[in-house]
Length: 444
Image 1: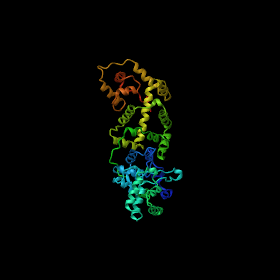
Image 2: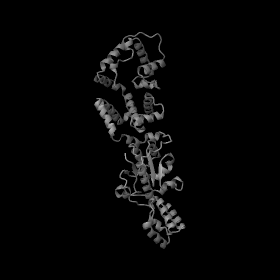
Image 3: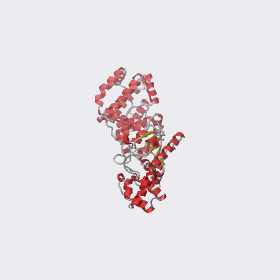
Image 4: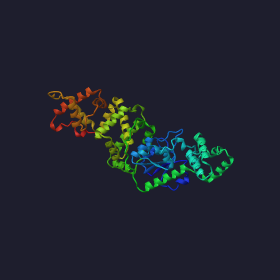
């Protein structure tokens, strides 16, 4: 994905025209940077962003991008604010506005704020940002247009106004002396400073040099905390589920499914996940999601968070994609448990469809015949280890009571009764048939 830059009133169409290799988007708002990050662009630039009346881009979104190995640049406006706050985490600040915030010379958000028109009108400015007013007054003093006390007084009166009401006519009205006001007005036609534009152009140059040079960001030296608010952010889930576009590589993988005759079965499983998302009864609670994640990690031996990160990279996804999968698993499991008894006939029909019913029936009838009793009952812990590790080839679940419920049993006692009978049955069978169900009965 090409580099992405969020900008609006700080740069004109003529300013961005030379950067045809960049994808320019409107001022960033909450959720936008996260959505872009999922496309793995070469770099992200933040210049302008919304904050008044619309949720501002979260620091967490930028940290997320940094953990994904994406360079994030900031300048001029919202970008300068976020870069000053996150430069120690690896965000790259550009320009004098960023430096002023970073060094504590500026502290208020309203220094870069302005009111502007819609994109259709080219983000026409309807007020003047305070940083531009300050820079212009400083230049006017340096060139002898006004003196320092006048500049300080004009800066103070502008600062006292609501940011939407800061305009050059208002600044001139505050001058007081008509001759000085006239002199300043004439000079402003060519002398005013657009500090936000200057910094925005500098960001584009730095991003362009970064991309052309093939540089790669240093690995982040911080831990990304997966908080509850991040987990539950609605725009994050919407972004994850929005459309089903696949890359060329992923399309080739789907072709592999088609060639192996497995496409329809995998599509059927995916349909179940899609349908369950729209079922209110399937909403999984935190415990269900935690169980699903624990099951996923346990089955694959992903004990450390770094193991999980390696897994998602090897499987062409990210932590958000994994979390979406886990959420689907939990939702499917929640609905399946709730409607277990309603599904029994459908499950039997599915066995018939797969030509597995007769094999399972044969084994079930065999288990109903009396079996020699073992000399002493096996302890539950050993029964569990025998069943899960020897028969199923998987670790013993941490919560066996929950596992019992997950397979449609009323509780753990019934589960252990079932295991004890299975152990006795298996021990009494012919050695050639001591592995549980015969191979022909396995579901794929």
